[in-house]
View 1: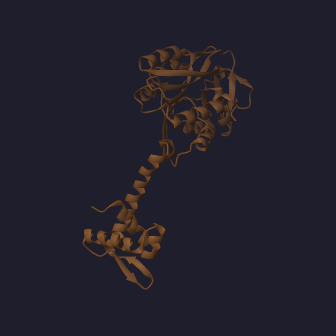
View 2: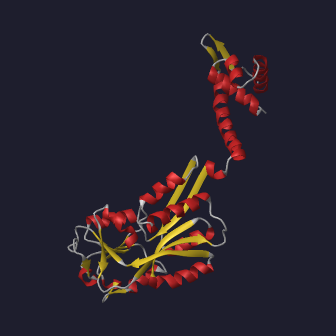
View 3: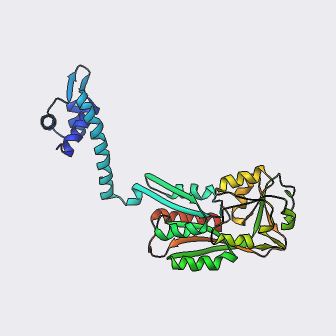
Length: 309
């Protein structure tokens, strides 16, 4: 089997087009380089290089070997990096599950600036709270972020504890209403839910926890009083629907700034004392988060607890 040093010599000769230049590059003598090449050709059983006026060029077999050798040497370089660097300098993978929050792009820009890895893979999935708990519990998602209604909080905390998931409450705030310019109440300072009953209620899909929202009363209106409800499982699509229809969405203060970029207003609801809680969820069985996970949480808290800067 061809040795690593033989492949390295061969690749360098091809790239330099000269045995002498390759020997200089690798700090070897020309005779040693020639013997190394000869041993490789003997092992392969056919010539790998041709000597022409313009220098040394690979044969057809040599060109195939060159491509394979480059791949092998590239993979070996990763092993060399592992010897000298922390794994987080080489590769960074982070899985984040999100529920009921239009997560600001600024969080990810900040995370990108803080992440030092050469190869970064960020997987962001929007889901309802029940699969989010499962995803964090099983380790599929290292971090979950969620906005939880106070009526849901107790049940979610109990379920989280049973599944080994820790919930960190970062902040609390009132229930907001998001509406676009096609809604007749766009531009009003405050709104009443009863005035919204002719609008389409846009909402994330319900599950066993968020299904309680269907029976929630806001002012003197139940959610089920709306004659038209549309469920959308993607926040960017939901924001687009708010912008281009008369629809409304029950939301929160933490996404108000980002909704504004879509021309969507975020309003306080009259006669409503319902609270939202902004939370981060982690697997309580994991003592230390990955560096990527730590950096994401730092970026998340910096944005949402620091005024969105």
